[in-house]
Length: 213
Image (cartoon, rainbow, N blue to C red; front, top):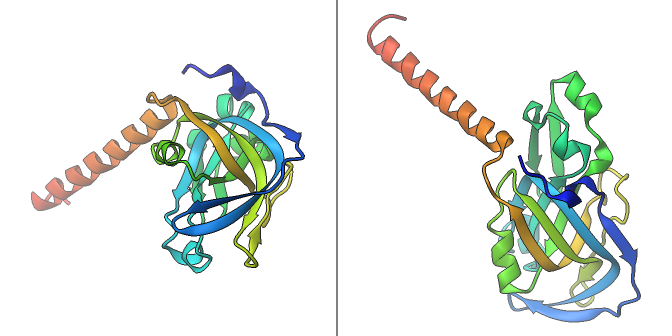
């Protein structure tokens, strides 16, 4: 697999003194307060798209958070056997598990992040909606706090070493690119595994129908 050179690097951030600004999305006005410039290159292991009309996003009237994207970089992307893991997104979290002790011990918790992506640009939102598991992506923007008027505000993590509630990065995205969307070994393996499961199921059904089981 061809790795983008930046995937060997940790995310880059630099503190800024940018004033808060107002934007509108889905007919709702928001205030965004940038805290750090942020630049991340990583591989997608899980994601969850939001449309503002479900569960807490609907309750909070949040149309700005277009997706949560969980990514890995450095050794987690290039060396760790990701086939040994299951990754999935909760409503605001990225979760993973494995039964492989060697893979677990090789996995670096500080080389994974769940990113709440904020965007009011239709082009950026559309590009984010195109992502697939195994894609290498790069996005730039601001680690930010945001909210509506006197309503609740969402913050952001500013380190990669925290865990649990509040450990996710909230990024106002200024640039988003899918660097490599070719079939990866990992994605191909997942596809082959699914095909084998289907074939096994069909074989079992046929044998039962023939009275061999």
